Length: 420
Image 1: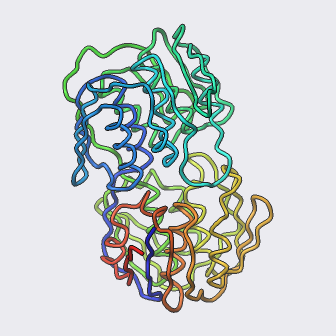
Image 2: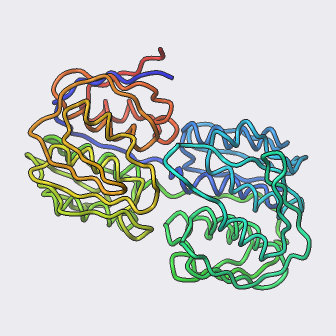
Image 3: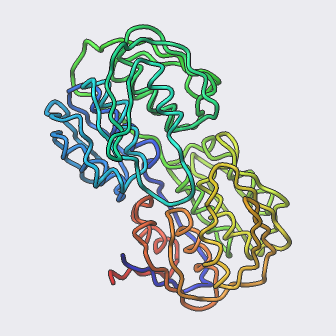
């Protein structure tokens, strides 16, 4: 699975270029199967989750080329409605293929998705929405088997603004008769990006980012090559911000829309970091020990993202004072806590609440990444710790961060990757 070897207590300074958004790229890649045509996608991150999604498309008969942030995909050769089970169990976002494949073929067989073990992530809202749109879905031998029967647009009220459910409903509804309205949808920038991509393909979607999404079902007449550029990754940007806050630093973050991660920057400004924008570049400066933030609660966008909870905890581990973190999105997202404790962090968890009492310094240790964002938190902790740390099982981290070692080295981190 490989390891990172990190020498701590080195200041960070330099430029970080943010790559394409993982959480925008995956649903857009899945949506390419809706109609058989060619797609030229830019700003595609070179990460393991993207490689797995592209492999799924290839296994289903599509042609894929991916190099240097550009993917050329031809889905005219799609020849099955069965999504390969082995790959689905590796990547959570593969469930979004359910709505896309149903729209293309009228049928689907797909396993329950895998990914990080960060608690229950039920897909009942996905199934409920698709059923309301005219899909019969049964469970058979551990697989979800879906068949389109009487497709028709309708109004769907989501009990929770689930990102995945919003995406699956969008991908199926774009091509069925009638108008579909999703109330209480997810509002993330990645949902807006998916809407923009679908409209570029010739579909009719509006309202993404607001309290309702309106989909006028139709089949695009134009089958020319679709060209589209994915938005940049706000969580990647937030992760480097967390790293900068943990030690003396001055880093410049380029290729990011500041409004997309305002909930992240505002928290770190409260902690004492200086954050400003100049000529489209976000400049982050930290000259000393940051202050604890009294309480942070993870929430759906535009609230503080659950995907930043672990990284934030790592930076609060050495902050001056006590921070309280409440995780409301997932029920098992504190697997990084015991690993941070090995490095000297003073953290107590009670259910979904974590109390972090900042210590003056962390110390090197050998720790294990249990999931993607928790692994990133361990990197942040190791960068600020005294001594040389080893982080094992870095496959999880490479699932979501492009050129992580290289980008950290470019800003002064002493980090190497081993394959053992």
